[in-house]
Length: 526
Image (cartoon, rainbow, N blue to C red):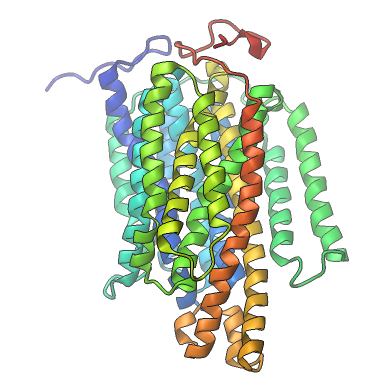
C-alpha cells in the first residue's frame, strides 16, 4: 500500500488532484446541508397538516432552523480561524445527524420547531465551514472554476430535494418523517469521506478569544424582532406596548451587539471588514439573494399544494424550472468568472434577471398559467445562481487569508439573515392576506364564520375540510402568494442598486493578499 501523501503546508498550494479529493467530501457536506432544507420545503404543507399546525407554525418551522443557522454562522466562521477546520466540520456533521433523527421523531409542531433549531446549528456550520475550507485551499481566481462544481452540487440538491421530498411524502410506507431520516446516511458518508481526504495544516493561535457576548446579543436581538413580526397585526396592534417592548427591545439588543463588536478583540462579525465599501455593498446585495433563495422555495411549494391543489410530488416537479436556473447559471457563471477574473458584470446581470422573475411572480394568483409561472421561476433561479456565490467571492477577494473565515462568516450570516427575515415577514404577510381572503370568500358564499370555517383560518390540514370551504381556502392562498412576491421584488431592487455601486476589480491569483494593505484600493482594478 502506498504511503499517504503529506498534507500541503500553509504556504504550499494544493495540487489539482489533492483539491478534487478533498472536494469529494466537502461537496457531499454541502449536499447534506442543502438537501435538508429543500427536501422539507415541498413536504412541509403535509407535515404541518399531519401535526395539525397553522400558518404561523409553518413559518417558524422554517424560521427556527434559519435563525439558529444565522446566529451561529459567524461563530463557526471565527472558530475556523482559530481551531482545526476538519475537526469542526466533523463536530457539525454529528450535530446535524442527531438533530435530523430528532426531527423525524417529533410528535407535534412545538417539538419539530425546537429540533429544527438544533438542526439549524449544524446546517449553518456545514455551509460556512465548507466555504472556509475551500477558500483555504484555492486562490480566489481559481475558486471561480471550483465554484462551478460547488454550484452544480448545490443545484442538484436544490432540484432533487423537492422531488425526493414530495415522493417520500406521497409514499404511504415511508411518510413525511423520512424527509428527515434520509439525511443520516449522507452525513455518515460525508464524515467518512472527510476523514480520508481532507488534510489541512492546523494553525493554532495564542490568546484565543471568542465573542460569546456578541453572538448572544445578535441572536437575541434578531429572535425578538422576528417574534414581533410574527405576531404583530394579529395578536396585538402595530401601535401597542407589545410592539414597543419587542421591537424596541430587539433594536436595543442589536445596538448593544454592535457596540460589543466594536470593542472586543475577536468579534464574530468583524466591523472593520463589513465597514469597507465593497464588503458592505456585497452584504446588502446578499440580503436580497437570501430572500430569493429561501422565500421562493418555501412559499412556492405551499402555493402549488394549497393554492393549486397539487400533490407533494407534483409540487416538486413544478419547482424544477427555478432549480434548473440555479444549476445552469451557477455552473456557467462560475467558469466565466474564473476565465475573466471579473465578478461584477455577472452579479449585475443576475440581479436584473432576479428582479424580473420576482416581478412576474408578483402577478400570480390561483388561476395563473403554469407556463408563465415556470418562466418566472426560471428567471429567479438564474438570478440566484449568478449572484449568490459570486457575492461571497467578492468579499473573499478583499481580505487576507487570516480573515477568510470571519469574512465568509459575515457574508453568509447576512445572507441567511435576509432569508430568515424574509421568510418571517413574507409568512406574516401571507397569513394576514390569507385570513382576509378566507373571510371575504366565506362572506360571499354565505357561510357563517365559525365551526369548520374557523378551522379553515387556522389549520393547514386542508384535506379534512368540506369541499366548499376547501376551495375558498385554496383560492385565498393562491391569490395571496402574489402579494408576498411583490415585497420580494422591492427588496431585489435594493440589492441591484447595491451591486451597481460595487467597485469593479479583478480576482487575485494568490491565496493571500500580496501585502497587508490598509485600503481596498490595493486590490488590482479592472
